[in-house]
Length: 284
Image 1 (cartoon, rainbow, N blue to C red):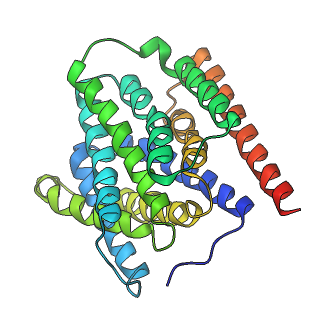
Image 2: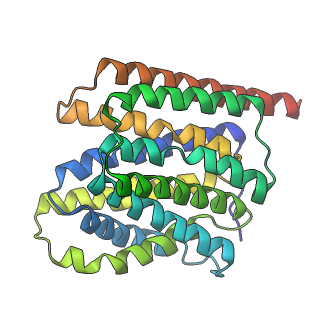
């Protein structure tokens, strides 16, 4: 039985909270000395347990949409990890977050969700803000890493569109299947790592809060918010990511990065407010 639909305003709030939780991943990954693929697998294992408990009574039916979404979820993370190894972090983040372009195309083709004029404007403003954030660090080097980062963006778009297409059921099942696959694939990497209580605490946070809870919030919100709009709101993640690193570790962002972050935050805020006003008007 599907979950009840949240209100539009609550769905947007859940998406903002999702972006907030996802954005903390970079900080906690930096605090671990493990190989990124081992971190991904351990996090996926813990998240899988949470999803299995949460969805234990939900009937699971493997459909093409569910399979595509799970592969997109896996691919987004795998290709991003690969990209960070083969190109600069700035390239990896910026190219992954070209995802709204692919969401726009897939949304029209598969979901029949046509973007509004404000979606186009917001997309352009956000991409300009991201260029300010990462423009100084973008390079043409690392062709294979750049291709992996673009692939990560495409996979992320597939996951988002599949989650939206699954809105009448349980979109969280996409994350369950994807996490189970990731847990199995990365198990050899996990077994090669040494453990400490601090590592376990960080992995517990990454698995339970940063992955499972965030995915649960997202799976509820995506049932009410169009795919492209949800993606634009989630662009908050790459802006907040360096903020947590600065506050805890002390890595200071460049002035242009701060300006770009302000541009992205402003665009997301305006888009969220405009969407909520439009839905309120339609109800009246």
